[in-house]
Amino acid sequence: MARYTEAVCRLCRREGVKLYLKGDRCYSDKCAVDRKSYAPGQHGQSRKKVSEYGLQLREKQKARRIYGILEKQFRGYFKKAERQKGITGENLLRLLERRLDNVVYRLGYASSRIEARQLVRHGHFTVNGKRVNIPSYLVEVGDVIKVAEKSAKSPKFKELAEAAAHKTPPAWLESNVAGLEGRVLAFPSREEIDTGIEEHLIVE
Image (cartoon, rainbow, N blue to C red; front, side, top):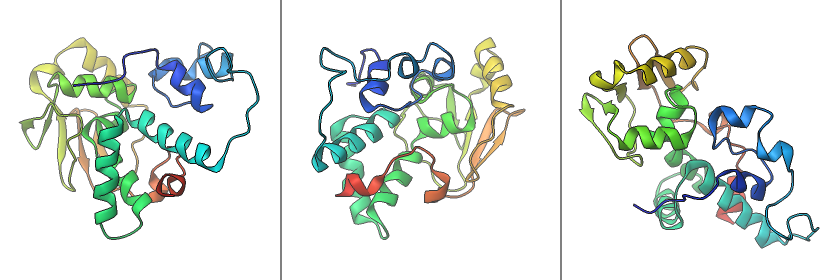
């Protein structure tokens, strides 16, 4: 499966905001956005007047990069959001939040969505007792996401469990750190999605 394999800190610098793609590094003094608060490349420090289309494009790219999806995938999510009842932009964000890799990250069992994607791909999580290794799997209300039995014994997940104990998941998720599992209580509302994305620009 195709995916972005270059330096992810360049993506944060290009968007001009922290996308939290490197986990704990993003909170440290080593964060690229804090050290170089301008776009990467030869002309990164030059001032450019951004058009309306440019603003909309940057918002779309920011959403793609936060959730780690490709252009074709993003178009698929957008078409699905258009077909649903309600506001298209909110439907889009709700679909992206329901991705299994994002839910694993929100529950605190990964330091970043990139790490969550890798853990899911390697089969470390089950949904309702069945092993799922598809990061784009969309969870439903009532689904129970749990660390696989064999994986739970590894030092890696013991370390992640300690970190998850100090994190508070969003209200639409319930976390049981002792059991290394979480439950989907409801679909997220717009107020519970704190990615800083202005979805109306994407729709426009």
